[in-house]
Structures are given as structure tokens and as C-alpha cells.
Length: 322
Ligand code: B12
Image (cartoon, rainbow, N blue to C red; front, side, top):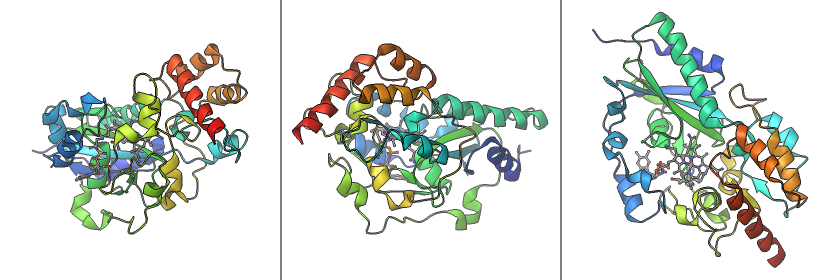
């Protein structure tokens, strides 16, 4: 007999853990022709890994023996707690150096995974044969594609998943399990149509024209690729507009992000060391120990100090040229 769990149990555990929403789909083979097209155009820049594990990208059920279901979870980081703090450092002074908002929080990979394994643990108390793996970012499948298919939102022109209630300032995580459940496609009213309509604000605001017209982007031109992932210096032609780690320009331009803030996130605590680091950077007083402290707890784990220094240099050059 099929192993089955009522989705209400998962949803109530998710909300209790601090996720804003979740939805499930049957693990099946997906059409990933969009990925081949993207790779063929070279939009992946130096991120060769995005072309690996094609079998699992196509069919995520292969990631777990008897994988039946993928449950997609969203966490908002559009918090009042952060807005109150950032008033001090992100005034309207255009010459401020900035980190992308998500990087002001604890490392989301660890925090979301911990919350997902917490949910798995609770379920296993009642269903000991519930087998599951949690993924955040590291998954060899497109998390946005899964969330969209599960009905948690639509893919915006800037290629991000936009949730009707929480906008796109959200992060995604998934559980793959050997259980089946109630799938959101069984009640299709939950599936969200494309709501960008004729709005092009993200395309028009991106200083590097990174966003194409087919709901994706050319990572070579995206400042968040250039300042977070690219090895070596940022290309001369790229404009950072103050962002020295990640970039929020297309998110801030999106009308779907004019949403009420959640008070605070139960999953993503603020990494308060980031405030100290930014203050020091903006006072031209950067110090490696502050960087190490912020990096230890935070989401900036993939950047080396030298790279951050060269990003700062590049952003400052832009200011002096303006
Ligand atoms: C590589 C990567 C990047 C790269 C490339 C970005 C990109 N758009 O692909 C870089 C470094 C630039 C990047 C930047 C950022 N990233 Co990133 N990134 C990823 C990662 C690891 C893989 C994405 C991927 O596979 N790209 C390859 C392309 C082909 O896939 P795709 O974008 O999913 O495909 C799109 C199109 O081809 C088109 N499409 C065409 N045909 C079809 C058919 C179907 C059925 C569907 C559904 C879609 C579709 O829509 C797709 C969805 O956008 C994911 C995590 C993951 N494992 O999924 C996080 C992820 C996408 N990133 C995330 C975030 C938060 C960011 C930043 C906001 C961080 C920041 N503030 O700087 C920026 C946003 C930039 C932007 N506008 O995309 C979040 C997005 C959450 C959300 N709301 O959608 C994710 C999901 C991580 C997470 N766990 O939450 N990222």
C-alpha cells in the first residue's frame, strides 16, 4: 500500500516552524529544455556545475530511493526587524556601499535546512518509515521551477519566484520524500498565473541589462554573479550601484515587493555582525577580523576577503566617476 501523509500535517508543521507557506507536487520527470537553452547561450558564465547531474535535474525523484513527492517551502526575509536596523546604514545616500538584503541574515542554507530537518524529525515520530532529504540551493534542480509547479507563485520577468502574498524577497527550500500526499495540482485553483503583465520595471532598472525578455537572465551581466561568484575582478563594464555583495536592484524595482513586512523571521535570525562590517566599510575602516566575524555566522560564506576588497574598490570608482 502507498505510504500517504495528509498534507495538513506538513503545512501546520511548516507554519509552526516559521515558513510562510509550502506546497507539494508529485516527483516526476520535468521538461528542462529551458536549462539547455540557457546553457547553450552561455548565460551560466563560469557556473559549469549548472550543467551537471542532468538526470537528477530532469527527474528529482532519483535523489531518494522511492522518491514520491517534492514539497517546496518559502521563507520571507522582508522583515520589519531588518528595516528598522537598516534605516541607520542605508539612508538615501547613494554613495553608501551595500550588501544584498538576504546577506544580513544568518546563513539561509543552514537555517532553512535545520528547520526542514526539524519538520522531518517531527513527522518521523509518527511515521517512522517517512524517509526524506532536505535541499536548499545545493539541489541539482531549479528550486523556482518546483515552487512554481507546486503553485507557490509565478516566475517574474527578473526570473525570480514571486509569491502573491510575500513578493519575491523569499528564499526556497525543499523536501523530497518517499511518501505521497495531497498535491497542489489536485486543486488547480491554487496555481498562480503570470502576473507581471506589461510591467518591465526590473528589466528597465537593471544597470547592466542582465535581464532578458524570456524570464531569465544572463549571469555574465548580473552584478550579483560578478560580485559574489565570479573569480577574480569584476568586469570593467559592470555597474554595481553600491552593491559589493549580491544585488537587490531588480527586487526593489518589483511592484510585487511593496508588500507588508513580516515582523521577524522565526527561521532567519539577523546576523548583527553585518551591521558592524558595513559601518566599518562605509567609514573606510575595513578590518579582516570584522569580515571573518560576519562571515562565520552569515550568508557571505562564499566570498574571500580579497574579492570583497576589490568589489569595494570597483564600487567606489563608480561613485567618483559619477
Ligand atoms: C545559479 C543561481 C544564481 C545565479 C544565476 C541566477 C539565475 N537566474 O539563474 C546568480 C549568481 C546570478 C544568482 C543571483 C541571485 N539569486 Co540565485 N540561485 C541560483 C541557483 C543556485 C540556480 C538557479 C538556476 O538553476 N539557474 C539556471 C536557470 C536556467 O534556471 P532558472 O532561473 O531556474 O530558469 C528560468 C528560465 O529559464 C525560465 N523558464 C524557461 N522555461 C521554463 C519552463 C518552466 C516549466 C519554468 C518553471 C521556468 C522556465 O524561468 C526559469 C525560472 O526563473 C538557485 C538555487 C537552485 N538550486 O535552484 C538560486 C536562487 C534562484 N537564487 C536566489 C536568490 C535569492 C538570488 C538573488 C536574489 C541574490 C541576491 N540578492 O543577490 C539573485 C537574484 C538574481 C536574479 N534576478 O535571478 C533564490 C531565488 C528565490 C526566488 N524568490 O526566486 C534561489 C532559488 C535560492 C534559494 N534557495 O532561495 N543566483
